Every structure is written in structure tokens, then in C-alpha cells.
Image 1 (cartoon, rainbow, N blue to C red):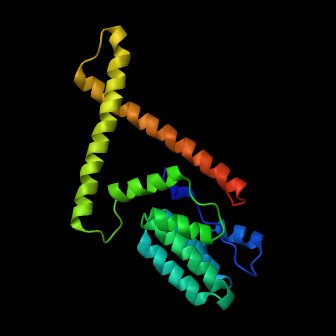
Image 2 (cartoon, rainbow, N blue to C red; image 1 turned 45 degrees about the vertical axis):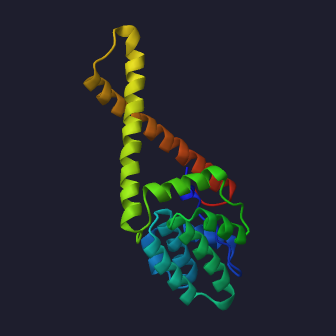
Image 3 (cartoon, rainbow, N blue to C red; image 1 turned 135 degrees about the vertical axis):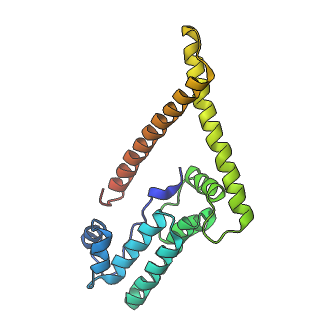
Length: 203
């Protein structure tokens, strides 16, 4: 899985940890309206945009964070921006290096592999025509493979009961795929909440 859920922990000099946690629980609208700790609020919005893989929005928020930040905060904000933009732009190697500069454990090899795969399937904005066409083609092949796998499982299960024709098997296979994806998504969210709780971040 790509490290979409890995929210970068933000610890800036002179800012209490409990304040950071409080700000991270606020909505985007509340953070936009924040004035006293504007640099931190903009940095949090930048990391959220990066988690949505919206590099343009993330870059804009971090530029506002740096402009509003105190001199002693700007280096930390810049490092946070480097890590967040590397995530948003699916640059796995740069993400690993940037997270290490923040003094945090780098993403796992599986997460980095997932991010590289996402970079191929869904290239970031600004990519050329060829990467986009390649991503569309691979996405179609991946979808066909998932449907084929689900259909095969359904037909295999139906064999002891006399078998099943292809059209119903395809439909049941798609439903099986949807259920499986929903379960995996739920499991992933639980792992995310557990990881955030372990890291001391609000869930």
C-alpha cells in the first residue's frame, strides 16, 4: 500500500505538542481561518493536500506556511514540504530521503513500492502524454485482471454445484471484488488509526 495515510508529524520549535495535536483535529475551514498559528495551520493543510496527491494545492499551502512562519520555523516547514510534495508527486526515493531528514522512520519497502506503482498507474499532473497513456493501459489491464480473478473464484466455487455460466460468474465476480476491496480498505484504515495512535497523532 502506498504511504497515502502516513501523515507527517509536525513538531516545530516553540510550539507545544498538545497545540499541534489540537490544530490537527480542526477542519480545513478552521485551519484556513487560523491567524495566531497560521504557519502551522497552512503546513497541516499542505500535508492533507499531499495525502490527496494534490501537489499544486500542497505547494501553495507550504508557500503560505513559509511566508507566515518565523525564521526558526522555516527550515522545518521546508523539510515538511519536501516530504509532502515527494508523496504527492509519487517520488518514492525523494520521499524516503525527505522523511529521514525530518528525523522519522522512513516508509517501508512495501509502501515505497506501492507509491512507485501508483506513479505508473496514475502519473502526477504535468506528466507527458506517453506516461498517461501507459497508465491508462495498465489501469485497464489491472481492472481486467481483478475481474478475471473474481470470476475465476466464483466459477471454481460453483463447480461442485454443477458450475455456473460465464455472464452470472462475471457479475458475481465483480461483486466479490467489491466486497474484497471494501474489506481491505477497512483493514487499511484500522492500521492507519493504530499507527497514528502509536505515533501520538490524533485519530
